[in-house]
Amino acid sequence: MSIGSRIGRGLVALGVLAAASSTAMADRRTGMAGNLLIEDKDDVFIFPNLTSTYRNLVSLDYGATDAQGNALLTLGNADMAYGVALHRGDVLTPHLVARNTEIGYLNDPPSLFPAITDPAGMPQTPATIVDFLLATGPIGIRVALGRGVTSTTDGAGDTTNATNTYLMGEFGWGNGGVRGESARFDVSGALLLDLGSTTVVGDDALSGTAIGLSGLMRGYLPQDEQLDLGILANIGFNTTSVSAEGVDNTASTLGFNIGGGVGPAFRFGAAQVAAYATLRIGYSSNEPDSETDDDESGTLSVVIPGVNIATEIPLNDWFVVRTGAQYDWAVTDTSGPGDAGAGSQDGVFGWNAGLGVIIDQFRFDGSLQQGFVTSGPDFIGGAGGGFFAIAALTYSFDAARSGTVPAETAVDTDGDGIEDSNVEPVAPAEPAPALAPAPPPGEPAPAPAAAPVENPETGANGTVGGSAGGSISIGR
Image (cartoon, rainbow, N blue to C red; front, side, top):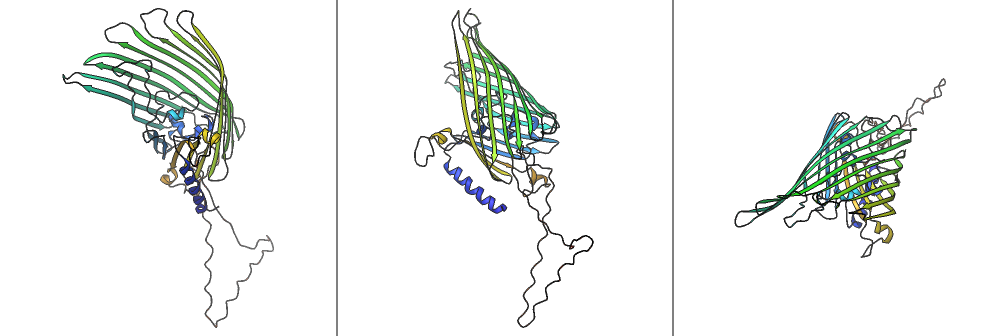
């Protein structure tokens, strides 16, 4: 199929998708139920060392309103790359491994002091000011700064305000292994500090501190050229405390979680299949008043087993379908003051489906509304709730910027969703010789050229023919 034909079909499909979409948030991985063994451009937020892999890329994610969404821009080369993100909501929990977390990342960060309610305005939610990425060699960092302030001053000049300021730093490292050939590992750790406070009529009222530590590891152990054994592990710790001015009591929370997963990750050209079983353990405690005895409560939650299965399948060189499902069997036990307590055992199942349109270095990805699948399609009215729950536009200009691989010839040979920038340009076939003009009236036509004489020793006729072509599928 020619480039023009593929572009035409892609634009028609994209027009249909855009016309049918009523709500949009963002990204490719959500259509696969958040499967972490299928690589994606959003990996730069959990493994900042991969910013070099996704260099020279711009991606915009769209939310349900014009105040919800994300944007990512990366620049650089294989030695050093940097990027900036807008409006990421995962800065407070970058390593949270749970279902459908991407939807929440389209919003501003929530407050880390949700248990506090006060007329002065605690908690105040922050907003991301800067979210910066840098990668060089095998290491990378991500730094995010956010702040939120509301303030009023009365006629006497006294101020009542609420503030929330956070700083998040993340470090990532990768060993540079090649999937299907050698072991590959990416590891990252993050530290968060969040500070909140309120002032009432010029006097300090409340102050809060939140600290978070978390880490995530993903590994691929090759079994053959198509199969890797995927390994996931994460750990997290967080604590918050809020105290009132002039009193000794403090309200605090403490949380801890650890989890892991293992399973196969297949790549069949550009098609991918990945599945893994998980085990997660989490504990949280709440102390509403440090000066009161026997008022603590705690919750222990164990997920065993958890399972995630996902696939991405290209139907042709410009249209991709994907889907995923996740199941968690959770055992929860809650203890309260005295001998109070509660417990439950329950299974939670969820699925997602999505699709993508790929035209050279441009791609459109959408995750379908579940209501569209179960109750749609909605052409006029209906109960499906729209076509897309999540959508994103991505353009990779790495090949154009480096000048080494024209868009017509870049290919994704290893199925990781990234066009291979080290592919040599395909030499264009020599154009056919121009046709000789017709002879003037009355003149005889020229004699046809003699047929090539076959070489009696080799059997070859001394002529060479051939053609060259290429196509591009960009990943993530």
